[in-house]
Length: 194
Image 1 (spheres, rainbow, N blue to C red):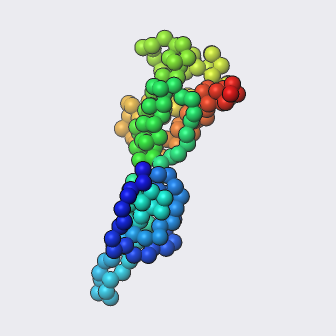
Image 2 (image 1 turned 60 degrees about the vertical axis):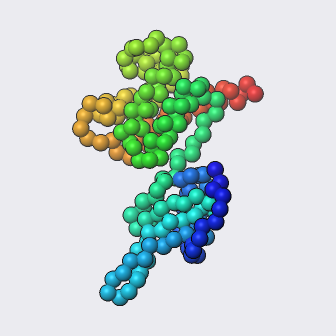
Image 3 (image 1 turned 120 degrees about the vertical axis):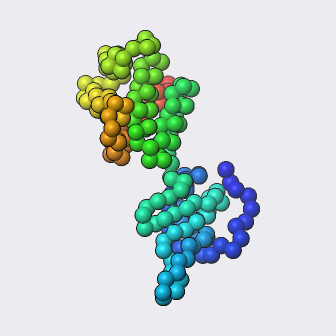
């Protein structure tokens, strides 16, 4: 959504490249606001900015020294031809990983595997192991892909039943596998038919 209007009293800011969390455009702001702090030597730029996206005119807060951006840039992996319920869950999963909610990401990946199995004919109200076996037995994953599903199961068990948080690497691994699987099951077959 493009934000109509003009930001008043912005200043030129160059060299601050980022991916807009509103529209997903890789951009470098041409204007925005700089947080000036004061010390004994006077005002200084501490690397805190409100940047205005050149594509959608929306503001983004950037604390460059700490790598903090609000809103975060979205993981923009789109998957075409997802059934409605999986499409909704995938949007939630993408939102969770984009926001750094790694426990939630893994739990949603696990839920999506269960939903995929049911949409493809598995019985409802079974164990996660049953759904993994169903996906494998019915050829949705190969023998070489099974360890990835097992990894999602183990990471999901940690997120569900244990105290430690899920780290970023594990969450991204689960998410990337899920994207690949959904593309293989839904997107690529639909493209072949058209």
